[in-house]
Image (cartoon, rainbow, N blue to C red; front, side, top):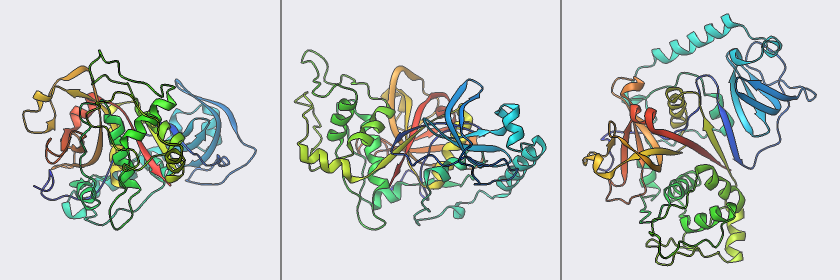
Length: 391
């Protein structure tokens, strides 16, 4: 088969919480917009003098808060550490009053959204087909969080990856899964509408991440296993892209076998070009509960943006050649990064949904490098995730 699914269509993923989310932003950010005036319906009105120095919402604290948009259900804000959406029901009473919060209006809006979602038939021909999905800004994507997602029968980016010439690369013996997942997302999102995608350098991004961590020039001790895990977190890799950009694969090829364990610093001209290549923002999202996080993941899948995910990983033998992550027990310390690129469901219910992911074990693994993960596996084993905005 050319795909894990015989018929398939669209795009990507991310996660947040039920009617709001906490978002860490890694990258260039626009100046914070002025806060919105309190109105009952969605609005973008602002008042330059209204800035909240500190906003406490449960256990979360936000600083230098600007209100961007108010809906009957939630408020979109920018704050010192990024952008987020918070349920009006969770706000302090005085701010609820100022923003015109009405429990009855919020309940009616939630019921309306649920009714719209329930009325949508789960049919394969509803999916956008081979057309490229409309491109949304990160803020537009975040504003969809908390709304019941539209669930297609099948959503699949794999044909688009194939069209762009982005195959499933092999990370080899090196513990660089987060690097490979991030580079794959970058290649997809910076590709022209027609033609082939650029091929970026995983080797350069390894160096850049070590540089961000203050470990530039690090080498694996010769008496250690060559698969020594350097310990990159997704946010560290995203910060490396922000700080040092990305080089082309031809400028700094990947050292597949890592025969030389020393990470070589790129030439100054390579670094300079990399910094100017593709300005990128990374949005790292956390949520209150896995089911709500996965609902927001579907929102991003439907928006056409791939998401890098960190999950607990089972022993390879646990796959039983079916390439479906489902009931297998995960390793206690076995984390792995993958790129979620779609989903499918026969019933339209979340419990029945399976996510499609692109791995970094080469095209001989799974179905040409792709695998599936059930909703319940992701509920239990999802660790973190982020999506990128390429400018």
